[in-house]
Length: 178
Image 1 (cartoon, rainbow, N blue to C red):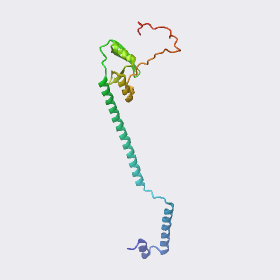
Image 2: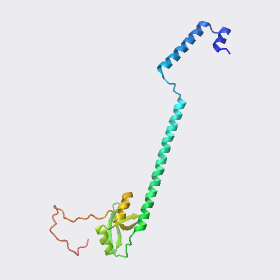
Image 3: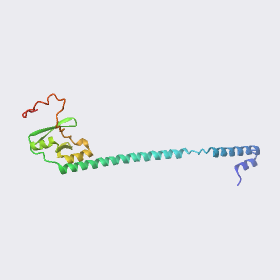
Image 4: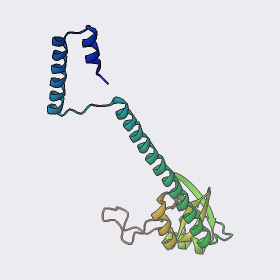
């Protein structure tokens, strides 16, 4: 099979001088391309690779979001299980115990003994599904490790009065009601 160049020469459409010049130009271009080592960039392959990389990144982000959601559900189930298994009865008390939760003052009615446990930090209030439960301090610490927003912090215990307190020398009457 003869090349197109040979066929064009036989037909008389191209002279041999012109054919040699074209061959020489082709060789020069190939030589320059090899020396410069510039790879020929295939735009479609580059676009396909970019699209594949973007898809992989989206898939990873979606999987991470799913895993985070599953983790939150698992933590919520653990907390619910700990509260249900360790909640203490509030009793049918008539003493109102006030505490702050979500920057709002809430009230639960407890007995005197339970109020003392709350005041000393042995029992802690935990919010669960729009209700408040009492749990032992150890359980509340475990719940706080998982979600600190659910645990109502116990009152601060101050054994020593402030040095700058101007009323430190005065006794507080026992019958004082707030």
